[in-house]
Length: 187
Image (cartoon, rainbow, N blue to C red):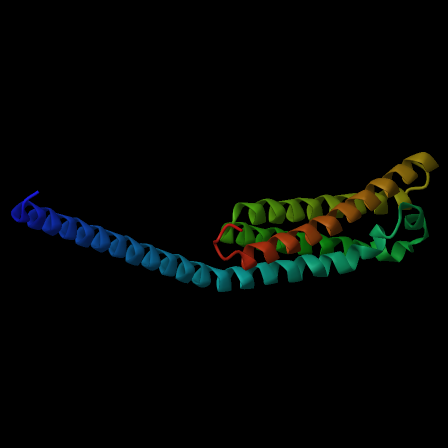
């Protein structure tokens, strides 16, 4: 190979290397900018989500605290004084269930999908629990229209509802922690 051809090939190789380095640098800068933008986006979404999740958990926890006595054991429900099931108590629970539903909508809209599903489950179970408590109140007060087996069935259903509600709230809290801890790395 003569010196002229070697010089041309050397210049061509240098040009290709320079172009390759420029492309690699551009790609790396673009990826760095994309990662930074994604990180900033996640940070901007995290704080509002945190507040929405916190409000939802606070209201659902308030309800859990009010009805927690019904989740202690199916065999214990018949020992709970009926004064716990006053009309005012049931009305307050219906109102609180509506608040939980409203807050669950906020949490669901804040996302992600797992949060939406868990929040909806908590809201639905809160409403079912209030209905079961109202039924327990009515069956407990009406000694003539039922036998002991029916009352026992309603007590067991109420216990199961109270446990399911409590467990769904615990599950939501774990999902919320995972959603807030997600840094977008996928690992």
